[in-house]
Length: 128
Figure 1 (tube, rainbow, N blue to C red):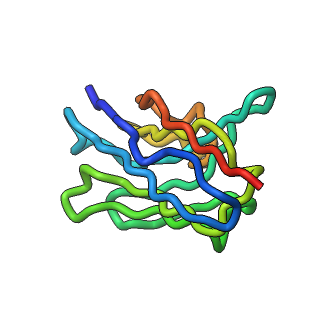
Figure 2 (cartoon, rainbow, N blue to C red):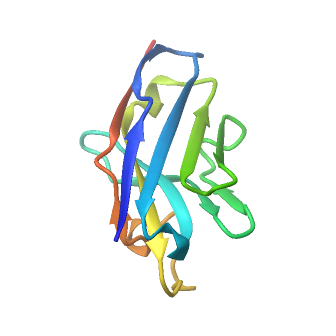
């Protein structure tokens, strides 16, 4: 019902920047939240940032606050994750996800279980 495709990943030196893009298609009118998640080998999935598409309210994980910025286009079919001051510990596979329908108020917007649709992911590698 909702398709998501990530792009913009790559390899960068520590302190550098990358901008990830999440292209949404399908029935995006019912998308309430778009989130960015990451998972490194041997580690659990971590919610990075989320944006409530109706009013633009944003949420960030403490580990990226002040360095990452999530935003959306006016058409709400593209969500970006601007990543600045990158660190080696930011290295991970980054995926975007869409939450549709009824929102479960008991789940944080940084919890993966909240979301219904997922992209394939894009790799981000930060070297020392």
